[in-house]
Image 1 (cartoon, helix red, strand yellow):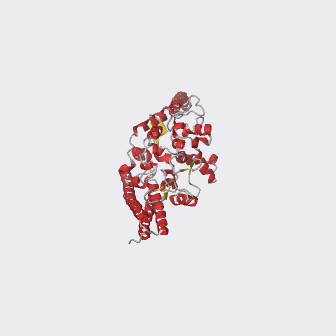
Image 2 (cartoon, one colour):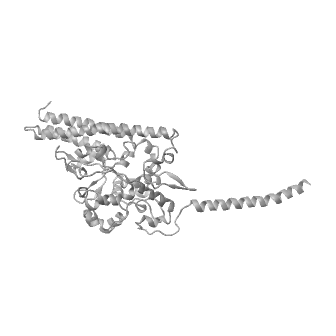
Image 3 (tube, one colour):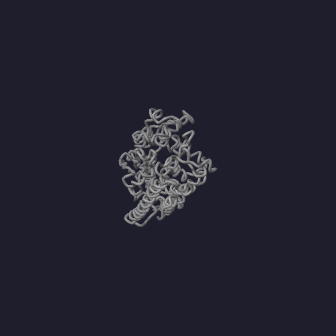
Length: 416
């Protein structure tokens, strides 16, 4: 009797198990069909129009479209008026606005003051998916073309092709300046890890650089290292200046948004994080999980960006960020006022009869150093949060060097 019951139980159980397995398989397949968003067609090797990619990656495209919401681009001079004094004699003194969303990159560079376009075609190198193709088309001549000569061939802003291989979707580097800088450091770009690339694709643009005087080619000044002191030493060794300040008489170099350099060796980078972990966190779209392509402050989506690692609560995290940024802004403003004081003292001493020229040269170098360290911080996004310790150290050097410049300038004219 027991064996008959077992047989009957098995006859009932087997169909039930089959049904359950079938339901699970159907659910699993349906789930994967929805969540796995891959190409359903072929994207051309050099497809610069990101809207073409949208039909294959609609959730990512919708995320990218949200960048249009970032429309604010106030002048840096509103919060940092000392910058305009510092940039006297240079194109940045005419106009220097904070960046809007990446989708406005081409529109904004076209609208910028003509004084900022003296570098010519190089000005759009980070502004459009079409640039690698133009560099391939014109070769070294690309960098020597004027802004007006090249702009008629460009109509696409920053987009998919800047960072992704259209066949595999793998991250890749497309800008020669970064590739060349890494190669000079002895790095094999074919052996970069995926996590390294999640920062380096950003480092194609979010770095400091300069235009080579003869060729106007973009160069990353990383040969001595990535930090402010190492980059200034690089420029000093070459005796390189981008312009001479009309009041101070100092030969100066201009840092550009050194986000990547500042982030390196920071607490977050040392813990293994990349730029994308905070600025492109994974987000849920329906039952999909995608890397957000809305490039913005992590505070705008703090649950996805920060609380995956930090368990302190969103209020604590926001207060922590704001405290760091307020401290940096306060010290930055002190440094700004100190640099302006150095410029004013140099102007007086240069006009004073019989001034000690050797002392003046020393004072000018201290001004060059002070302005470099301050500007390195002031033009980098995040108000120091990418690396608070290094940022405050740089500002401290700026203040100290500015005070030395003031003292030397006064000594040069015999003032106390």
